Length: 169
Ligand SMILES: [Zn+2]
Image (cartoon, rainbow, N blue to C red; front, side, top):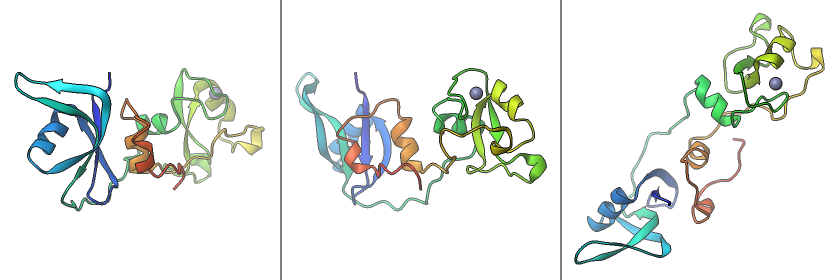
């Protein structure tokens, strides 16, 4: 069952994902309003019934500092859906520098991809073209909201319109 709620800022931009309990409290305190609810479901207490929120919106705009996804091994794996970007295998995953470090390649979102250990050793200290390998996707810096969407563990169709579905920023 869905127990995640998308919180929108007052301008309808996605802010974060929270639990149903938190969303109900925010609504109850008058800090937010219900935008979408789970159809046909209610949460009941002894005396009251609450709509089950799916999307809520804060009534007051909150300025948040620009959020970025930190460049970590795990986050690169997540961006690449835990898939080798050369052969699509999903095991023995490592990080590969597309332009090898020995050739000046840096550890950046645009130069790091998920690769299985076999592809990684096949590629060695070469660029993909030098050894006739091809990337399935070009590496990119993921946006915070795309991470929010893809890795929340739950995505409701009602959430999608609020996200910029463009993957590459
Ligand atoms: Zn591979």
